[in-house]
Length: 166
Image (cartoon, rainbow, N blue to C red; front, side):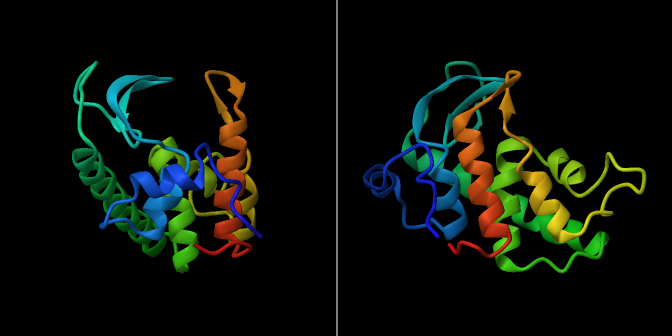
C-alpha cells in the first residue's frame, strides 16, 4: 500500500527534505509544505511547515521552519508516549508516528478525543482499533470536509494500523 501522496509531489518533498528529518517529519511534510510567510490557516497564523507563527506576517527561512518542526515533532512524540503510559497504551512506533502527525495537525486535545474523552468511560477508553477508526472522522476545517484532510487521515490510519510503513 502506498501513501496518498499528500498535498505535494515526491519531487517537492525531496526539495524540502532536511538532514534532521525523520520518517514522521517527512510524513507531516507531505501535508504541510514549506511557506516562509505566515498566513491565516482556519484558527491561527502559520508558517514554515504548519507551525504557529510568532506574529501575523512573520517570515522565516527553511532552516528555522525545520527547527520548529522538529521541536514540535519531538515534543509531541514525548507527549504521546507519556499519554500511553498514563492510560495503559503500549504504543508501537508506527502508532506513535501516526498519532504525532494527527496531533501536529489538530492539537494535543485531539488525542483525548480520539481515545475516548467524549465517551462516558472517558479518556483512554477506546481500543487501538477504535482509535484508528475514530481518526478517520477528523476531516473538517472551517466546517467543510477537505480532500487533503481525508487523504491525511487515511494515511495516518494506515500507518497506525500497520497497513503502511514509514
